[in-house]
Image 1: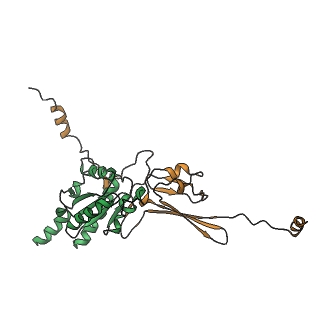
Image 2 (image 1 turned 90 degrees about the vertical axis):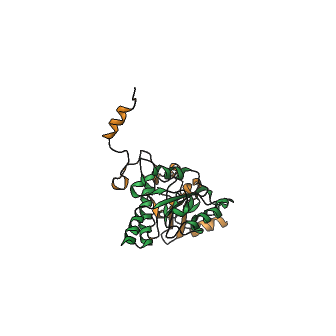
Length: 139
Length: 146
């Protein structure tokens, strides 16, 4: 009589369970994992390329005119995101980066779904019209 | 005394029910992975039920489609109070890439009060465990058990 799995069965008695003790022991994400978006507002130029390529239209851009220039606010709604990483691939200044944070939970008390950032874009100064030049044109 | 013990032990065995409201099956697979040996949420007493009448926590996946809306509401109304409704993935939160479609009526918040929303497309099983633990806290609060 043969018992082909007896070695496996006896060995398994002394093995640890395969279950991951997750909430008590944190895990590491694999390389290249696409998680929550990290937005670097110092690099952004407000070209709107990410809004164009976003399939889920999760990105909104708000423009506000202030004295120093245009105040541009970018908002990434992670609750609407597909994590395709198109925004970070197409960003010409690589201001968007998909981090390895995977836990995004929204309850009545807390909401960590929104990634925001704003910066001021200085407008070019208006060309000064001199009296001499305008006079020349008339002639 | 006995009632108190029963109340406390019911917190330790929250059964879940899973509704697919037009999901792509991605979130559903991740939820089923929780019940397997690797993540094994039966550590928290969580078990998948076959009927909504036995459930405490309802998981809804998918951007609620026009066809599933009535059936989803009918199933959710069969879950006894106090219940916790958890939306799984980006779809029930905002309809994701399907927003604006003629056959999608939704986000889920339009139809039922959502207690916990888990983001991700699809969420990692670890993220679902995080959300599940939040849902257990809310269930405890709703039952009034300390």
